[in-house]
Image (cartoon, rainbow, N blue to C red):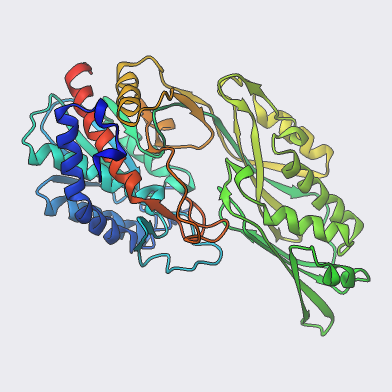
Length: 486
């Protein structure tokens, strides 16, 4: 990395030495990152929520710990759900937490999702951005300390979890059975520091009335936390199907087929643009597109369309108003609520939604939401209801990481609250920090529209971002160790 990527006039001699060391280590870091990105570590959650979370998550954790051992660092496996790589022998510790599980592949990829490649300065692989690059970065923070024989007042630990994307049950287990660091940083957000996370309120909406015979199937599941980029339905022949077929502007494709009874039917496929479910405005929801088409062209019964129309209204609103859970405050902004999943279960339409509500909201959202759902012909099963979290934005560690980032990148960023959920909401004495930062867009033509970001097809990360984040973390951790008493 050219020192020009950072602000040379703002750099100390130590900063320059760190930047040069990081630049020299990047080829090896990429090799280590490639090793763990080759493993398709989509978590599998057992009914009792206890670890482990599927064989691939066990395998990727073992591989990461093996890499740490190869560098002569102390490693520990906690019940095959959380791993730790340690530098130092202090009684108190600072933890850097990442996760090795990934979201499902989802959608059309131009690249093999589990055969990482580097193109034009970007690594492309499922999980390389969210969040395996942070695991590799944390490892190299430890390696810097080890190679420079730096005596720290605290142990420095890189922790890796395996169930972050599907409930964070790994952290629930860890916190219940093992001691946590005196301070934890979670590089799974943006710089400088995320000092708070909105509350999470997720659930399933089940239509009270049975689905009609006209709607044979509905399928949309790219993961609860991803805006779906594909949704499918099969409907019986209908008078207005020809209008949909002839519509040149429709984003829904139509394919003729037959049912098992020999009746003519049509497969409808809607394509959207994936995004994180907590930031839906960056995507285009395929489930919404599909439901709108079914309703517009009357391809299901009147009651089916009433059910689907309400789901559309929820996503069109985007702030939870139809469910009565809209709330807004200055630091967090408004509630965000998105329906991302849909299917037919036991003869009823079922939809999964996630929401993020402001840090200042003290109400029990479940009571209001269940009442509103019932008024609209649904029952609501709450699958997750976690309170917002706030970490003191004036804590000296927050100040150090914020100042380090701003000084080295010549920014004036401030700590913030975000919608996305990280391990920081489950861990004591924790805040999220990096590795996201403003960078120039990817080279034109490198990614298709709706590709290249976290949770998207052809997920990628700028190696420049990894490099700069590693410099910031090394310097910031050194300053915390020098100036903060835990």
